[in-house]
Length: 232
Image 1: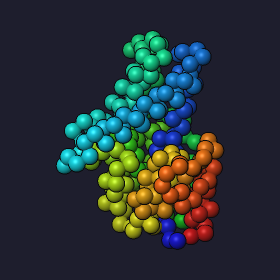
Image 2: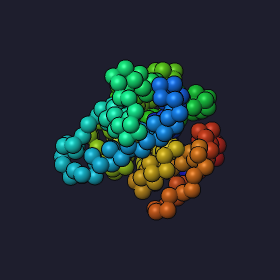
Image 3: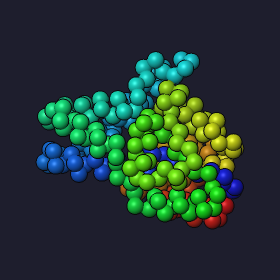
Image 4: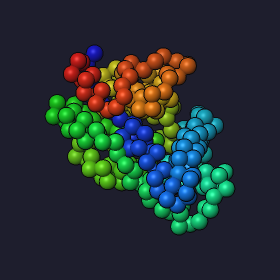
């Protein structure tokens, strides 16, 4: 195994999407975890609905909306579903917090170690480019990532093959020379199907998906990336 590039998913992998629950709990006492979980589930559901409902249109789905807009609409649905006050002030506070999600603590050290070994580093995300730029800057990762790749250029979300194909349009490597790292099991599966070498960061100690091949590797946090590079 020769790994020439490490490509990270962003939301859930580098940035803790459930950290939004702390602010949600402050705004809606007793509902923070429920908001964070339903918000995330609906966000992913909307990306799949958009991509699957119009998979053949050239130039991307005609139903496409930016990930930022999807995130806002998912929040609105969540608050309506939980019968909570969807005031403009609360929605805006949560959205601004989403733009600066908490990064997982091991991120910086792992990225620094990869850069020291001259490994190409990148993000491939459903996130809009402005969302990703805000999150990366807030976490202090800007100089540690060679590329930030957003699917907005093709208007089609993961797990479409076109979305994973963006990596090789930017980084001249073979698919198997890419270590794709995601804490989302569905994303790790999609990347494995595409042909990447994959690492599923199973932070929540969940079972494997029941369909498809298992990811190439599994670990508990991003530090497993360094172990794999050391043995490649």
